Image (cartoon, rainbow, N blue to C red; front, side, top):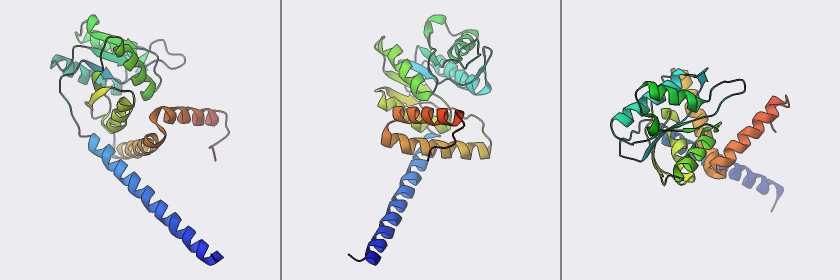
Amino acid sequence: MTIGRALRLGVRTAVLVGVLALVYLGVTFVQVWQATSGESHEPAEAIIVLGAAQYDGRPSPVLEARLAHAVELWEADVAPTIVVTGGKQPGDRFTEARAGFTYLRNQGIPEGAILREEQGANTWSQLAAATVLLSRRGIDDVVLVSDDYHAYRLDRIAHELGLQAQVSPIDPGLSARGRAQAMVRETAAVAVGRIIGFRRLVNLDDQLSSVRSLGLGPVG
């Protein structure tokens, strides 16, 4: 094979790989976008609320919206148990789960109907810990509550963890720009996570964050 022919073959291969990658990302984006309009009120055994920021024991607007939706589901008899998730950031006095627990109690949810997972620092670890918590009670049929742009990845993580999951998303009220950025991030996360596994994706993100925190810049 001549050098010129080899170069042409290499260029064609690169173009084909690029086209396939764009198609893959495009399909993934559509799947993420379609999941934002999903809704589920089918009966389940538990409702899992994904954690978000809290301010000294008070849920942030994002977390409060998730918790309020969980209350609606509980009152509609979708499931008898609500699991609140999320640990705390350095310096915090309260975990996200504790803030969620207090909010639910103030809304009239009985203490016996609420379970807390207080260690998770990200979506995967929160859901994994909640899965262990529920498995001890023989529960794997759940409804997941989080932001709508997050629904598809959440469903895939739940599947990876062996849960029988439905997603009941909420509209987080993002601006048009914020929603576009969230959709792009989610598309990238799902695209990579489906290839390497979502647990490995979390580990990779943690490693990159550690490198950035040391001032070493992006990994090449």
